[in-house]
Every structure is written in structure tokens, then in C-alpha cells.
Image (cartoon, rainbow, N blue to C red; front, side, top):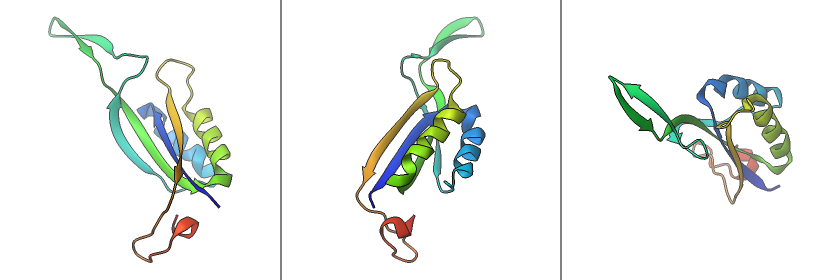
Length: 114
């Protein structure tokens, strides 16, 4: 079976909801990174001590999940359902092919290593 990597960029306050939604569909392993970025939002303007400045890079959370191809659709649906607010900046999901996975401790390969 083919392996896939899901990379999802979401709003930080949605992390717990997304994690719970993924657990409900049987996805348990993930890597979470705090990142900064912007897309169409293009940041926003704030005032600090009377000076206006632009915050270009907004805090986001990046989830990385490796799974079998058969689980991709339900994982993506769970992320969308839990992360969506309907407002600009909800994020993006990328699905990428994975050529190999190796568990360092046991040297298991492929889906057995996930």
C-alpha cells in the first residue's frame, strides 16, 4: 500500500479540536510544529506605543501525519471539519507521496514503521 504525508497548516487555537477529530477516526501519530506564515491574509496592522506596524507573519500550527493511502480521505475530512471557521486564514492541507518510512528503533519499514 502507498504511504502518504499530510501537512496541514491550521490556526493555533484549533489544534486540540483537530487532534481529537483525528483520534476519533483512528489517527494517533502526528508531529506538531509552531510556525509563522501568511497567505491571502497578508498579515495585519497593529499599534504599539503609538506606532503602527505590520505583522506579516502570523502564528500557525503545522501538523505532519504519515499514513496509508486508505486513511487519507477520512483524515483530511476530519482536519477540515475541525479546523474550519469559515474565515480567511483557516489554513491549507497538502497531501504528498512518501517513498519510505523506517522506524529507527526496530528498523521496521513501510506501513509497519508508522
